[in-house]
Image (cartoon, rainbow, N blue to C red; front, side, top):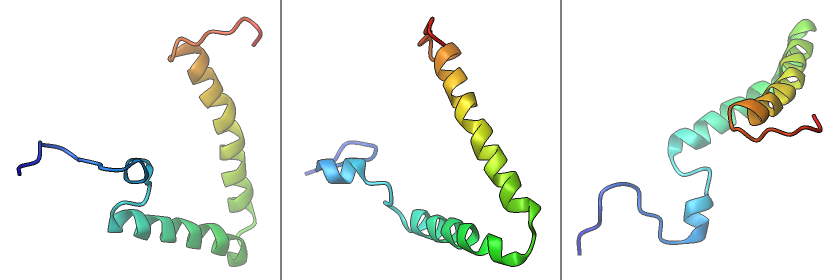
Length: 76
């Protein structure tokens, strides 16, 4: 039996799975290692700078929903 082209997921858990390839596991491990070891380096401005980027990313994503995705809300 031949399968069609593309990625074929047979179950819901396979479809919703985030970690599917070895690269995903490696990148998640590197991200978590940097996230937990960064405050131990002694560089005090870097964690606060990253937190500032995250804080401003939330309104940027909200503005993207209001403008680009055409989900305009008068209450905003």
